[in-house]
Length: 523
Image: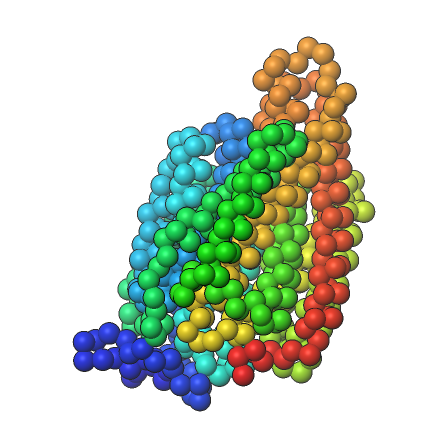
């Protein structure tokens, strides 16, 4: 039985250059295809957070510097964000299903390299390759959902399920990482990707349609280079600020990134077939939803890293127990991702998003004011669960507003933009809030370093709490508790920053999206 909305095939067997009919509803095969697309979607979210609980074990094995540790954590997300626009446009040109299958195979290979890394540099490189492969999967999954579900309500639900699966992968990362750490080495969890990819490659030709955008032009390689040249120096500058404050290298890198970003925008305006169609930003739903997604994910991405470190390094839980404590936030996120599109059928999406973000603000305030070594794990988990409610809501409704606002032949580009800001937000959150917490930790530890510590031990204690924990046996009594208090001070400041930024987003969503209905941009 053919797909109800799959493009007709020409005599050559190639997809015809016509978009699917917008009048038919999806049938059982489309929903089975959505279930198959859940596999790479979960994998993508999983790899964003898989190493959060593994960082102490990884640090003891590979001995990365603090800067290398940050790159290990977010090289994956930044490379995804860097290549998403390129891969979204490439999928529109060569075929979305074809790109999905190629990227999935590359993802399995890179996962294997990451699992057996023998140095920090090798792991960073493997994570970067994972990001490049992951960038092929994200826009392909979203764009294929657009092809399979042309009915606005079905598509909104499809996006909600997609966002829930992605968020579920993010939430399961620490849990699965903890389970595997109990039985295997820190890299074993990466190998989960291999059987899932095999299943995807075997079933994709059966359950998923193929689609190429009509009249797709060539891929502009200079634009690809400019997009990477714009993002990576900015990332480097942020990390250098965390390490050495505002020095020449950090300011120079930020300035260089802004120069290339300006050149990228100017080139897109001149091209007849740009890598990124800037005309999409003329749609208010598209632009505001991107802003909410970006800064909402900045807040939750950085806080997630700090919560997982708190559970292990302050509360003292094993990786497995810490991972299980991340279960309630995961359930909150899943509930929000599934129910938000259904609620938005009766209440304007802007108000649904604003309400969920308001609950997130309460969660961040709880983390900022109540987190301490004596406050109890329940308070931390409850606060983070409220933060995750907002994440599930904005991921589901924001994705639909972004992709639903774009023409059908621009779905790949719009999907790529949605995923770019989400992954960039998570990675920026890890870099920005992680850097803020680290800076406050180091300031708090200044003046509390006793005499007689060896140079390596002194540097470890000054660097971060996880580094201090790795040399705990060599520390004098009380110093590790001082380091934990310094970490909590940084955690609280980062959570307060998140509360303030998410409160602004809630007001923006209520004011700017109050008259926009779900999938209205595509109607």
